[in-house]
Length: 424
Ligand code: SF4
Image 1: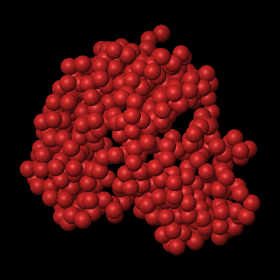
Image 2: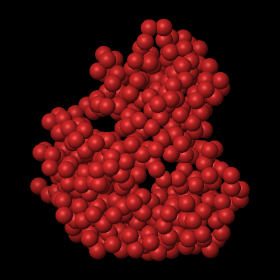
Image 3: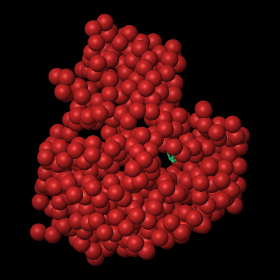
Image 4: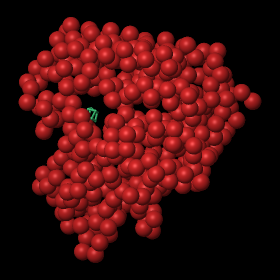
């Protein structure tokens, strides 16, 4: 969501006649688009603001903006700590960035954190530099209240964009060369609920599937309880729709899941996965886990290990719990010592590596269609791309522009990537 908002910022400024600076030294305006989900992310922003404050002492006309979730959460606390900041732009005011930063009289320590809960900009200008992939906002905010999560506080209640607006945006993107879209929502599996039209994510996927020129549709993120079988049917029946799903489990023990207020049990999570595999046997599932949630015992953590193994996640994002002010869990004692959190984090990642390797090795000998993203980061003579299930593929082949498709024969795999040869 933040990447998409950053694309919006860039597009909006390009439309207003500005252009991207080469680096911080050359910039007239610097925006830190922030995340609040973990304390670690916020600490990085605070330390970056220290650096930018020194930069502003040299370049006094520089404007500094802090945007996004941390801006929403901390508001004026940011300008009190860092008077060099010109504008604190909350999540509901994203659309106003150009007006607020270019208005005569300047920003001068403005804090704009009202307006939370709207659906974001009406129109999404993009500075995509010809990229064939685009993020598209399907909804913002979330109506769930997971005990650890700051999102409903900083992004507000769920607001879905009407299907017609999403379709119109995707049609415009495709007319401009986009071939792959990723539909975004903090809990996209609940898309449409607030629109009161009795239509859900499966309807949206079907409607987007009709857009001419569009080749692939990906979507993030799904809450296991809110993801219904109609979505799995869409994944099975609509060839453009991703065969991969991000279905965060967060924990494998009923005790911890209850404390997290996730709204499902371990058995219910596993039965959702079994349903998905009935519809899409090759479905590639990515998870999220939080280790060291208050009260998590060794037995609970072992349940998380076994859930990871039973589900057979292709990959997982693993986080050490940190309390977020304003959440229900912030009132609980953060009683798992940091060294235990770190060990559980490492153990879970090590198991995930083994599971990922086994998953990826099952691709050896198969031919996959790959969306080419560009030269590989490690070796510019190789290309990197992704499958419809979001597996990363590295392959040698004819140099192509980013944004084309290739057929690739997979001959090897690591835990992180598949290695292949392009089919001539
Ligand atoms: S469903 Fe996701 S975004 Fe919503 S409260 Fe839970 S963790 Fe946060």
